[in-house]
Image 1: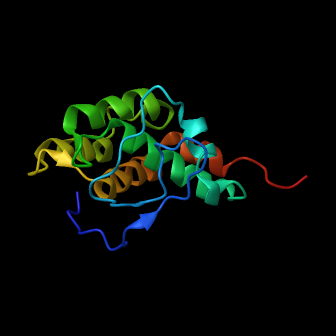
Image 2: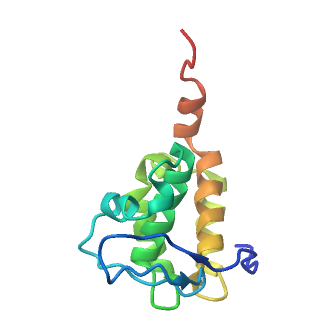
Length: 147
């Protein structure tokens, strides 16, 4: 993983409704946990800035919420948790890759990650690396976009 420092500054989530979901700035390094009983779709709906967000913005926000819901109080994912997320939340991209050298290299790199935990940036890099090598992406590229 790259181990890069986050370049984004803390941003306020524009939340409304539940008073426990304040609009106070949150750090990308130490995310504030939302109760796990709230579905990701409801969490997304509570972010006022995403109400008119694009599909791409909502997709990234969904990844961020899943990461935050699974991370420890320091905003990091343990290796076992990261692997579990890949198996449960990303399986359509990982299926069929188990024997591919590139996929094996990515998982080996995860196992050798010196910090034993992944921050959000490292997790995104892992997801993108798996995505670009997946058979599912090849299927997506072959979908007709015009009549």
